[in-house]
Amino acid sequence: MRGRRHDRIAGVVALLVASGATGWTASQEPRPDDGYRSLVARYRSGDGGAAADLAVAVSADGRLPPSGCHGGGECEAAAVLNLHAASLLFGVAQRDRAGALVEATLPLASRQSSAFAFDWLLAAGSLHQAYSDHARAFGLYAAALELRPGDPSALLARATALEFSAIPDGFGAVVVADRDVWRLLQPRGEPPAALAFKLANPRTETPYRRLLLEFLTRQYRNILELDSTRTEARLRLGRVLEARGHRAEAEVELRAVSSDRDDPFSAAVARLCLARRETTPERAAQAYRSALEVDPTLSPAWLGLSQSLHAGGNREGALDALGRALSLGETRALTAWVDYHQGRGRAFPEALEALRARLTHPR
Image (cartoon, rainbow, N blue to C red; front, side, top):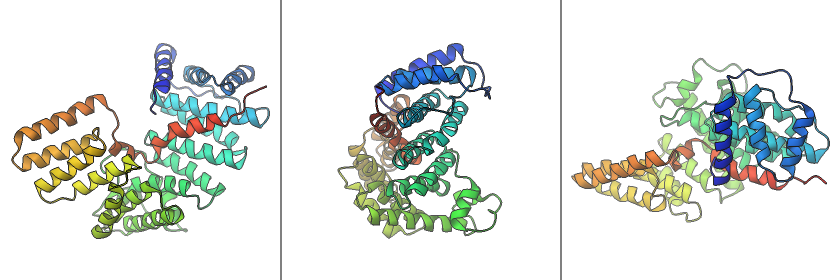
C-alpha cells in the first residue's frame, strides 16, 4: 500500500510491534467494548491514528474487536477502521492477525447497506491481493458479485484472482482453492487431484487449464461489453489469448492497450508483453525502449533491453541497461509487472480512502 501518510503510520506500527508484540496467540476474549468504541469515534472524526492504535493492540494481545455496534454510522466506521488496521498489520508482516481481523469484520460489513457492503468487499479483496492472497480475495469478490451480479468491477476483480492460477509467470502467491475454481469449470463433482498444478502447467495433458483460459476469455470479453473503457480487462484478455496460442488476436488487444494514454499502467505492461514477442534483437530493443518511455521504473523492461542489446552486439549498452534494472531493484520493491500479478491489489489505497470519505462524523 503506497502513500506517505500510510507509510508514516505503518512505520509507527512497525516500531511498536517490534518493541512490544509477541507471537500470535489468538484470544477468544474480545477487546473491551468501551475502549474500542472510543477508537471508532476517533476514526469517524477523521483521526487515522485510531487505525494504528487498533493494529498495535491486536498485534500485542491477539484480541479482536467486539462484533457489536450502535447504529449504521458507527457500524460502518467500525468496519472501515478494522479494514484499515488490517492493512497496517499486513504492512508489518502480521498476516495471520490481519487475515483474522478482516474475516472477523466480514459479518459486520455484510449487515450494512448493500452499497456499503459491496464497496467494503471489493476493498477487502484488493487488500488480500495486494499481499498475494488470491484465494481469500476470490471469496470476497464472489460475495460482492452476489450483491451485484454482472458488475464489471467485481467481475474484473474475480477474474484477476482466477487468472493467476493459469498464468503465474513464476510468481509465488496463494492461488484460488481448487474447489472454487472447479465450481466455475464444472458445477458438479469434486475437483481432480493436483488441480492447481495442472492449471498452471502449460504442458498439461488434461483439459482443465484450457477450460479455465476459455472461461477467462469469456469473462474479459463480457466485461468489455459492459464497459469498453476497461483497459485492464483488454490487457488481460490479450495475455489470456496469448496463453491459449491465439497470437494474432492477442496482438490486436495488446497493441490497442499499448497506445492508451489514459492508463499508463496497462500501456506499460502491454508494451512489455509485445516486446517479449519480438524475434530480432533490434526490434526487441526498440519495443523495450517503448515500454520504458511509459514507465521508466519497469525493471523487467530494462532487463529485456539489456538482453536484446547484448544479443545485438552492444555490450556497453547491455551493461548500462542491466545496471538500471539492478538499481531499480534496490530502490523499488514493486513494479507494474509485479502489480499486474497482484490483481486488483493496487486499487486498495483508493478504495480505503473512498470508504473513509463516506463515513458520517459523530454528533
